[in-house]
Amino acid sequence: MYFGAGFRLIRDNADKGAHAITISSQTVAVGDLLQLPVGATDWTVCTSASVSYTRKALAVASATSSDTEVLAIELDGSEDVQVQSANASAAADNGDRQALTDKNTVNNSGTDVTTTTVGFLQRGTIGATADNQIWGNVLVGNGVVSTVT
Amino acid sequence: MSAPLTLAQAVDLTDVAIQDIYLKESTLEKKPFYSQYYNVVDGVTDYYSKDSSLSGLGQAARITENAVVTSEVPVQGYDKTYTQVEFGKMLPITKKMWKFGIKKRDLTRVVKSLIAACERKREVLCADRLDNAWSTSYTVSDDSGNYSATISGGDAVSIISTAHTREDGGTNWNNQITDGTTVNMDADYDALKALARTGSLVRDPKGNLMDVNYDTILCRSKSAVNFRLREIQKTIRVPGRGTMPGTSDNDAAAIDDFNIIAIPWITTNTSYWFGMDSSMKGDEFGLQYKESQPIQMEGPNVVFKTGEIQYKTTMMFDIGHNDSRNFSGSKNTNAS
Image 1 (tube, rainbow over the protein chains, first blue to last red):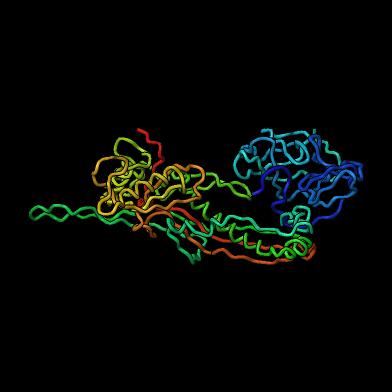
Image 2: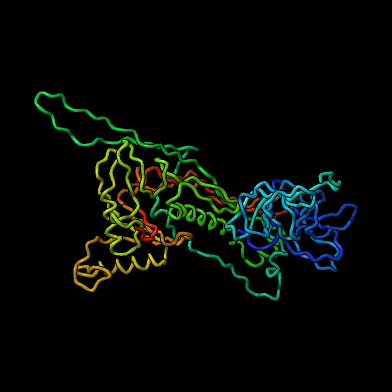
């Protein structure tokens, strides 16, 4: 199994493949989650403030701040993704919507997040609880600002 | 399916400044352990396979003068259903990584790791049944996501229990190692005598004593239990006359020689130890491994759109037990 930080596709029925997406002044590592902010043309790495309704992509190559593009797989939300959790994994959190901690970690706070500042839906745990690994779906939108508050 | 191995994830493979790239992987799974304590049945063709049993009879009864002879009928045993489960793993590699990394470095044998991954999973799942022998279910740690597995026997209790329900409704039988006072005895000379005693008290579905002879002991490899058992084993094997382990007197050992199966795949409850009557290992008693598909590797599959190379291994089996009368176990806690 995988350990450590980052998002990793464990099942993708579409075999989508990767392509280059545009970035500006971003430091990206393999497994980082990127977002396309509303109205923007460049992708940025996700943060704890990332919202559920933006486009998302998973970096499969690294990039430095001087790079203008990075190789990534654009997600449509149906992929099963493994990710590092900020806290010990808990099966009791399955079904919870969770905010991101940063670009490579999900904040499994133990409660379902009902605001739009949320990025992941936990569906299961992987390995021992102390491994801090969970799986689920990245919350992806079409860029339209959600009215859910 | 999943994100393939890319050049960025293993840049050393395309770094011309690095002359040698080695594959590093455990080979522990190449020596199979599961078949030493599981009854292996292959060629299963049914998704569900279910077994049951019929008991024998008890003892004959006295017939007084001109009386009608007393009759008795067997009782039906418990059912156990084995449902085939598929396990597998896929190795996806990008076309560029395959061409410039894997093939260039002569590392194509990395795909054989898929077979090893299945072998490992099988060993772990089999050993998990001992690791959780006092439970009726446990959480399987799985790369695809953890899940709960039910591991009770036909009598709906755990493999090791003080309260196995007897088929005829008689007194429950026990296979937790005890000398009558202390239970879950720590692996030592007195515990081995208790193990023999525990086996001597196991009764069949009609309440007849079976005198189960636990000739094999299973434990975690290189644990304190394993080392103590090896000390005892060598002591009682002293040529001419085995002496009593752990004492300075010259009394002979009262226990018979035994075999040790030291299993490296028991990872959580490493002090648990078990007695097994190897002569009873078969379809009727003990842990069962029922296989409908051995490990098979498929590939390469090339994803037309991306050129990604995919290899896959799968296997299908189920494991479990209906009747654990040939097993006995201790948590090594020496509780009274």
